[in-house]
Image 1 (cartoon, rainbow, N blue to C red):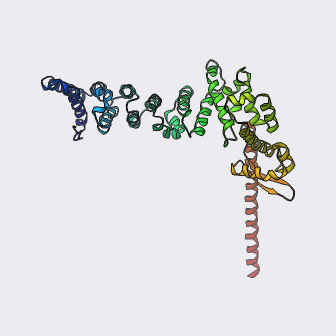
Image 2 (image 1 turned 90 degrees about the vertical axis):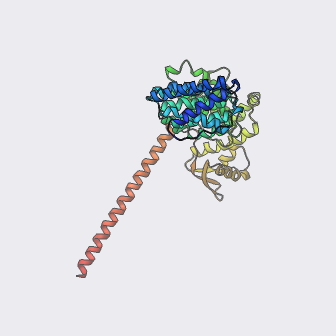
Length: 415
């Protein structure tokens, strides 16, 4: 097998053209093959000398087509090397538009037959991504990578990049509609991927949040119903999620008046604004609905007890009597501390237990919904803290002046 050696700036491109041409015409015999190989190499040289990088990309991709359609004829390392050389053409383009045209050609070729070596194709796409200076080009390539990962069933190759999506979106500067498409594509990849439940829920939230309830969304918001339902089910099922902003999202709120899904919206409302007794009443009337969506009654009771404890904490003045906890959670007196420990373990409650007075003294609790009222409450607390700090600083400065004055008087008296 021939080896591509970099000796000059242009030579890798000619080496790729020669190598792929020889491979393509190998079965035709030297009398036919040699003239064709020479013709292709001369054509490549002309493109290089004239700086026609788009034409060069078309030529190299046409020559490399055999390698992609019959990858078994070339080792993966050689194939990756060849494709990397072709990708490097975007760095030579004379304009951003030309670089994007070359990018489009490369992506079109790599996303054909996604079942053949999808991991290698994705690796090359990410190399292309890193070579592009254009934010638009990067966004375009990433979208193609998502499509390839989905079609080629190679989700594991692209999922690690999801943790950087927020910084990607900021870098790309894409609009709301583009973000919506991106988040929807990611949710579809994560939906059936084991062990990614939390990430799936997070991206469902990101997708649903792109619907602002404006007139522009009126024609498309209905398309988000299935994802809104999925987000509700994931939240209710989760044993570790106790806070979300779903209730007031327009894409979720539309379910309240939807004949098919209004009961699910009511269930979400119970988990975020009510207590265990409301859930039990709902379950009695809609047990079949819960089963249809794979919700386990016992798990829901456990979660609603913790949610009820949070609700008690938010409505108390810092102290919650045992009697209020036993009533809201429908438990015995000797179970109170067990549920307090659970809440502390989930990091949704900070408190201390006063066994003598049978009360729980709460210093912090998780808000089930963190909306405008909670932000205003936080602003008020920060204002109080700021005032207290300013008062403390003034007191320290006043004491310092007093001490300095006292020491000065003592000095005069000694003299």
